[in-house]
Image (cartoon, rainbow, N blue to C red; front, side, top):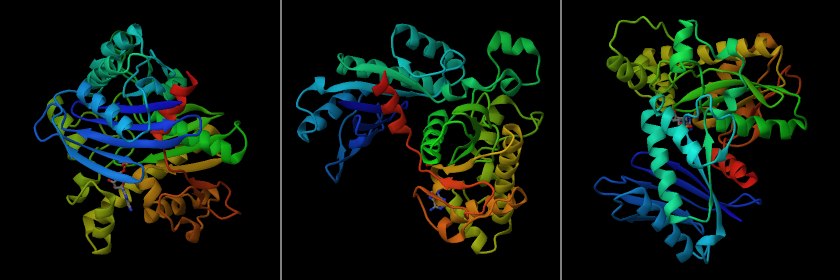
Length: 382
Ligand code: AMP
């Protein structure tokens, strides 16, 4: 059975086609500049990478081209072989604690929640409608970045602001990256061979968040109402004093796009450039990395206490999977918990493995995330 996992942005459409339940990737790619000039798409299929410039007036045309490519590349003979399409949705609010069928009720709730994620939720609805038009017989599902965090208790998700804000406007923590935290925590439990675990999962990419996961359920996460909470990120500030004097518009720009590693270093939001700067003795890169690592360590320590211990720490996403030095600095700062990094094992990028010594009090693992597969698995089970 073929399942498509799709992520629609306002001018883009990313997709991966899986054979399920074997989880083999049949095709993947992205349509870019939809509805703008110079649009194009890139596809990886049958071991080849194809790039084509083509007019993409809307998402429907992108899906039609995707179907044509699936047929031309002999992945499907007929449209009906695609049994399910899973759509990634950024904000599911308090309505959704799991993946559901994208029926009228679900879509209207996603629309209603757009005030919490205006760009993302509206783009996703455009994607759902286009996919339904092009593939009317496939089961369409909606997979929420926030759903995994819905198991948090009120004392974890409430803000200490007037209670009426919560009642009237839904102001609370919803978290993000839930599909990734769910995927790596499930995988970690498979490796440990049990589900009654206490895990700290660190999704550290350009956007970054940490979750505390007990018995497979999220009990705390570092992102908040929006993705700009918790950790220091590529260009987002994460936790900070909310009374810094700026207008909401200035805050949106400065705190989301000009802060984080970029804001402190003045060099880049990309941790590879920060590492390069550190090698060259750039003091602001050194400071940025110190603050970045410190914040991650603080969250791991906080969640260690919250969980009452920890069975494993998981590193995932761009930095978590690839930055040898960042992982090492984090784990070294956790030595007080009896954590011991295995330098040789840690000297790797993007590979699933344990990176602590056998006598480390808590093991740490790299588990490459796979949100697309998680979306396909949820869709397949529905
Ligand atoms: P993501 O948002 O998960 O795609 O992560 C993207 C980020 O991962 C980039 O901006 C880099 O900061 C980081 N990254 C990717 N490759 C490496 C690497 N080899 N070493 C350090 N950081 C990396």
